[in-house]
Length: 285
Image 1: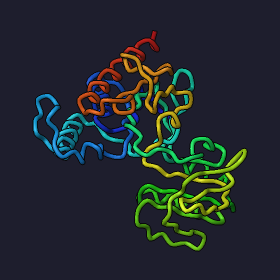
Image 2: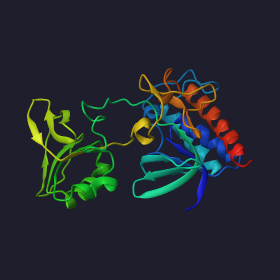
Image 3: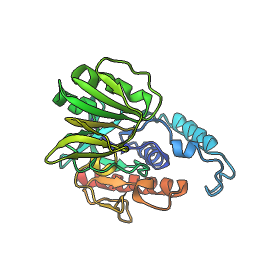
């Protein structure tokens, strides 16, 4: 596969800013995301972005879109599920595809929904965020699946072809119908087990025995994407140059902490991109 200079994970203001600068500097890059920022889109009025006064979030997103189109910047809409640090490059898994990049800029935004009890503890021990990656491990087994939106139900269909039984927890109105799928309109309180997942406990304290749990999310938190990434109080630790503790990995925007402002995200995206340029130059020496 062709290795790009920079993989930018996240297509909000920070990711877009990094991509614009990468384009200007003629770097090869991939901008991963699920479209423009929903958080920006839902903003009623924005008054603190210099030179752009009194715009709605929708209007600002439209301007982002126009800017990107004029520069020929496209969003790669595969959902990134894992990033592996290979030393001199990063190996990226996104849906059913694999990519390589010399460096990475994380612009994943702030995680708004906290993981449930046991979710992180059993990651890789029965908890998974990727149906394509781990579905084969649960052939003829019993699993629970939590799905954030109907666009991801294709992965539920895939799991239904493998599993013997699925307890399905959609976070939207679902009409999914299959003999081995049981829709449940309650929430999971915790994932439990000893050495690996053995059961889930619902909010009403009902227990269901399962062999595994899939959380199908629009975005996976940065420290789950990239093992060994330093996190403090839920945010990626960066220095003044947006460098993380992992060589060749940079971060920008809400994922680095407060203030959660568009101007701050754009500025950090710019800084992260220029730090990436310096890193790429060092690799060529």
